[in-house]
Length: 58
Image (cartoon, rainbow, N blue to C red):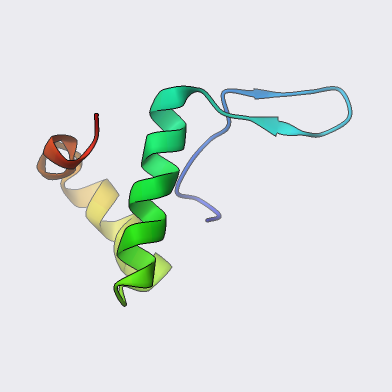
């Protein structure tokens, strides 16, 4: 999911940590990808219409 999501925090050992909002975004990305959307298209959806996707996130 490179370029789709920034971690909330990166620990000194390099582990990426995510808050609940970002975990919900990860789940949405996974659902879209499993439905056949390539990651490139998902990234463009997020960049072009973030407001269009807000209704699908909680």
